[in-house]
Length: 180
Length: 126
Length: 143
Image 1: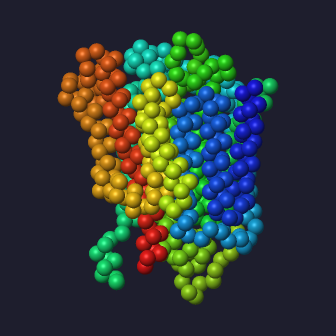
Image 2: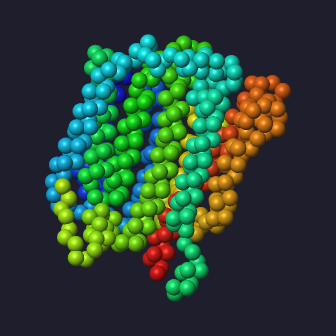
Image 3: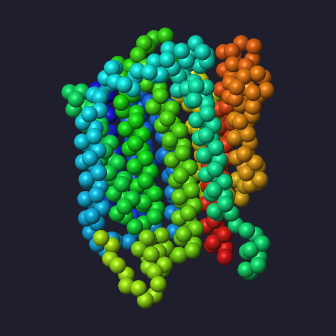
């Protein structure tokens, strides 16, 4: 039953992606990307990834839509009609997709308990996380304790992005007065 | 049945990935390129998390009622990836705003036309 | 948009609940889905709602620019500071079991402060980026 729901949601996501590619009104593109993020969050819940679903819903459908609308407000809202039919990019994309499909034929079957992803370190996290950290949410335990360095690096990346946006968009008051 | 389910998940993920790739390389509008890039990134999240699911298991939150949990390791990696993705999107949009103020447009063709020397012949895009 | 009564009343109701929900998500990240990233984004979203309804200047009076710029750095410093505290108390960098007498309680403390640092940085960055985008257009209109 979960498979049927996930399959239907994935088909809707693919349809939303095609609509984003075809649509030329940029406001519609931004709203469609918000719809796509919400569908993605639902698919993630069907795949038992509840932490990731909450993050995707908050970040992808919330902050991303706000940022895109703010940037869209500062520019024109319509994309120009392309002059030539983009056949070469379409061929390149389809060829890449064919190569990827050929690559996934060797991947393990869906929900295979013997797959390599469930060996090595994941059983240790699942069995020892509550005993060693006292935290029931295994994802939080791994994120904050076992892989704390990665989270420190991620926080630094967010910090750097904030500093970068400040450096790009800060107005210099003295230059404005000099020009006026 | 699970074979079709497995391959269907991968095929839809790959379709979304190449749709995002097509939007990035075929469309000239800069904001649409950024949207296509974020679509490509989200398809990679699906590609990571789908193999971690175990049918009959539950979310990786410890409870005495359940014995089988889905793999928590991809969840951790993708949490980091989502936040890094939105940081990249914010920087990209800041660049788009500055480009708009410098050139007056966000269409790639028009920006390249403004950058080309006045006596050069404009080459058509393939 | 503060001339519309319905929007004003609904915003007043919702902003308080959104902040409360963000704190719930932050502190219950140990027992259910949640954590610093989601909570930081939800706090930023509540202030963005306030800025949309009551105006950017009102939001800037509530949370000034200098405070936000300081908070961006404070979050990373809190995270790195937890690591240094682990060093000072005898373990390696970012060791949590030395932060308290009982190692498991030390893990609780370490995870609490680390998630708090993440919350502060994510909230401040998202809100600062929104401030910069929103004020860019208004200055362009004024020129």
